[in-house]
Length: 605
Image (cartoon, rainbow, N blue to C red; front, side, top):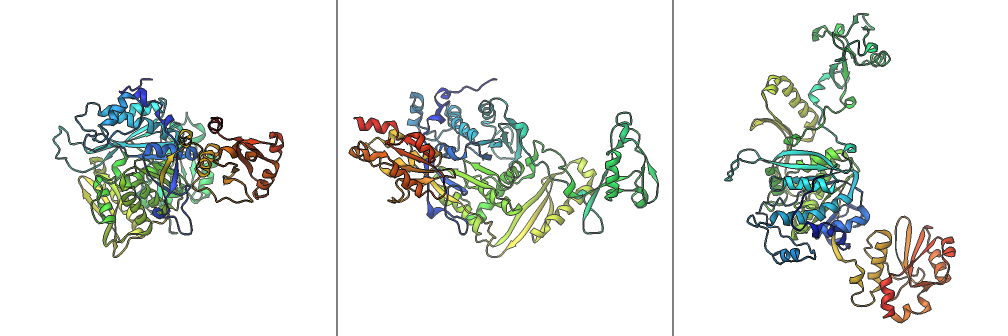
C-alpha cells in the first residue's frame, strides 16, 4: 500500500502512545445537567482543553465505543491563525515549537508538514475510539484533501474508505482572485469495517404516496412485474385473476410477476393489488401493487453529491446571530450539515464525538435530532480555545433552555436542483413539494415554496415573539487535570493520598476518579467503585509507616472491607504488602495489588 511521507512523520508516528493520560475534572458551575441530575462524566460532555490530550483522556472509557465522529479541523489555508504546539521531543519539532507563537502562514514552506504532524496522532486516537462499524467524517477543502485521504488510508490500513461526499457551501461566484470560484467542500468518510456500516439512505419521495385509500392513509401505485423472461423465471409466469370479476392478466412480454403464486395470493388477500378493471378511469393495462410509506424500503443509496440538499455557510452564520444577537464566529457550519450526516450514520442511541468543536454545531445537531425523533443520542465535544465556555457551551445552554428571539425562524426542508429532465416531469415535482408541505406543515406556521439559483427550495417558517422553544437535554463541562504519570506523581517524593488514589484507580479500572471519598474508619481506604469492582488503597504518604507492619493488608482489614461491601462486588486492594495468601484472599473475592514499584524504590533510597 502506498504511504504518505512528510517531514516530522518519524517523530509523530507513535506520539499518541506517549501522550500522558489526564483526568477529566468536572466544572459544576459551567455544567447544565438535565433536570434532577448531577454533572457526571457519563453525561453529554463539553471538554475544554487540548484535543490531543482530551482524546487520550477519553480512551480508557470510550475506546471502541464511539459510533460517529465528525470533525471540522483547520483547512490549512494559511489564513486561519493556527499554530503547531504539540510537545514532541525532537530537534525538528523543538524548532517548530520555538515558532509556535506565530501562526502557520501561507508562505511557510513547511505548513503542510506541520499540519500533517498535527493531524496524525489525533487521527490515530480517533481511530481507537471508533466502534468497528462506526464512521469517521471529516470536513475538508482542496488545500489538504489529497493529503488527508492518503493519511486516512494509512491509519485505516488501506481498507477503510467509505465515500467522499461533496457539499455546496455557497451559492454564487466568489470575488476571490482565483482562476475558478470554488463553491464546494468535501466530507471524507472512513470506517474500520466499511462493508458493515449502516446508512439510512435517501429520503423516500413522499409525492408517490398521494392516493387516498378512503380511510385516512395514502399509498403509491407501483409496478407488479419485473424485467425477466418467462424462461428465466417460469414460476413467476402465470395468469393473475381478479377475484371479484374473474378477469385474467398475464405479464407483458419480457416481464414476469414480482412474486411467486403463494406470496401473490397473500397480497391479493390483504387487498394490496390494484386491478385495472376496478379502476377504468386510470387507464391501467396491468395490475399494480399498492404500497404504503411504512412498508417501503429506502428509494436508493445516497449518492456522493447528496449534501447539495443541506444548507449553506450563511445558514450557520444566521443561526448564531439569532442565538447570540451578533456575528461572533467566522464561517460556522450550517446546522443542517452535521444533522444530515448524523441522521444518516447513527441510530437513536448512538454516541457522537467532535474534537474540533468550534461553535458547537455538532452538539446542537444531536439535540435537535433527539427532539425530532425522541432519540437518546449523546455527544462529546472538545474545544481548546478560550471560547469553549462563552461560545461553545453557551450556545448549547441556550438551545437546551430556549433563547430570547423575536422574528421568523426558518428551516430549509428541500433544495432540489432543477434540470431539464425534472422540468419535463413538472407534475411529479409539484406533487413532491405539496407532499412535503403536507407532512411537515404541522411543525411550522407556513411552508414557503420558491425557486432560487436554479433550485426548488421549500422552507418552513415559524414566527417567534419572545423565546424559542428549548430542545431539552443537558451536559457536563469538564477540563483536563494534571498529567497522570508516575514520574510526575513522584517528582517531589511520596505522593499525597488523593493523588495516588486517582492514579491507581485509573490504572486498575480505566476510569477517571473525579473525587476521592472522605476517609471513613469503618471502610478503610475505600476510593471508588465500578459496576464490577470496589477499589481500596491502604496507604499513607509516610516513609516510616510504609515500612512498618501497619502498611500490610491483614485479615482484620479485609473483614472491615467485606462488611462494607453491600453490593458483593469484587475488591481490588492496593497496599505495600499482605499478611494473607492470595488463595485465601481469592476465597473472599479480594484481589491484592502491589503499590507501584517506583514507590518501593523511594522507600529503598
